[in-house]
Length: 121
Image 1 (cartoon, rainbow, N blue to C red):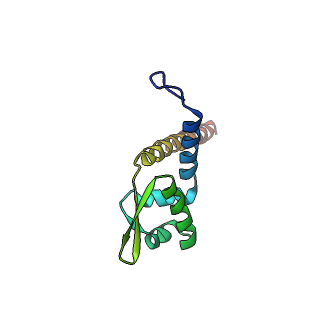
Image 2: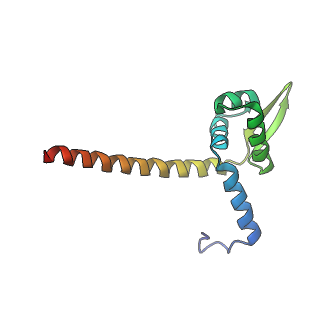
């Protein structure tokens, strides 16, 4: 995975990278990050967007916070979360683009197959 202009990754770096990817590799956390892409949000707002319980959202936010992906700040009676590591959005965007391309190719193959079957009749 290392490019020729980068030094080899140490075992510690490999572990950190794996933890970071694992932290963003959960459907609920992807939903939370996608919501936070637009800016700060409270736990209540994130709970509504993720369609799960407040306890579950708090647990996921705690993990994202521990990994340095999100930060939180007290705002009166609320806690607001925001993304502090924008590289996770770049990762999500790259993966999303790859998934969209793959689906487009699959749809094109099915459409082409359907068109071929129709013209053969």
